[in-house]
Length: 170
Image (cartoon, rainbow, N blue to C red; front, top):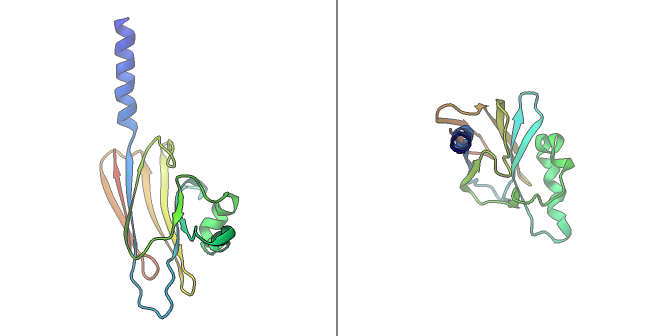
């Protein structure tokens, strides 16, 4: 009986040691333009072959009557082609309202939705933004999972996105 309890305890310790977390900061810059609309933003993970491993966030105009806000999701062209057109909006725990200018934090834990359990491998964090009467921009941050040591990675947007940060912790 002690051996079984010891084996279970060892398994629990090793299972938590494998889990990791990722903290993402998405900056939406303040733009000085005549007609400003908050951008639609999609955040997802891609595998090496560019297939989608997980949708992490989709921000769009959820308050439009009759789901009218979903009409412009296709303006986030890469996200739409990779996974968006297959989704039924809203996606529980993933989609939400557009965000104002500023820094927005997202936190994900391995094994919990929407991240799920990522198998070991090479991935890219992808953030895409599109704005009505504005532009479209996408940033990618490559990383390996699971992480062996804490890492801080980033990409700098130019117009529709500001600094995108990815903090990985074992």
